[in-house]
Image (cartoon, rainbow, N blue to C red; front, side, top):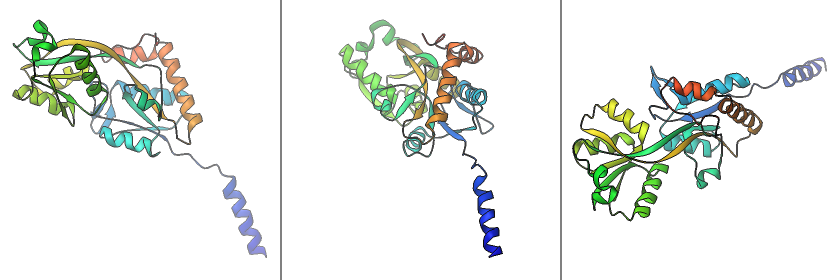
Length: 253
């Protein structure tokens, strides 16, 4: 009887101890100049915005850098809580809640130095040539929409990552590459592609942080996104981005 009583008291003590929740897990990809690894640690302005918001809100958070398809899959399956930095579209809004816009950037075409076809003739000047792009992705969908809008005839050559597209351009296997402008410039520098240059700018876009709609940590995610919104409004995000020579949304306008 005494042993049973002791066991019951032990159970009460253990059950009274609060269970420590696992950290909120935010996933990103190798996406310089926004997110990348330094000494095997996720780094860059995107990481700094996420970790700063968590710290200010008193949330335990972790960041991991993974291949982008896997990162999205883990959030869809409930094994992670958020993604960054990414564009917004209707399909993603079905399973993600988006922050205020974090980074303002734009798309651009790149071509080989000295050719200047896009500058002089626009995309129609590519004829039935090929344009490399990472995809399937928001970027490849934007390229397809742009081709239709302009009535252009070029072929879209999709690659599993941005680096492959830019290498193909350097080697002469595609006629141009369509990419986020800042990402493209960072890759040209990283890969030492001295024969590749930015050519024609094409609109602008915003990148966001997003949290899962199906997570069981909705209250913490709401607090996180509210803190990010405060950081955008009060200029904290702009100050972080400015250290990396990137442009924010200036208070989310």
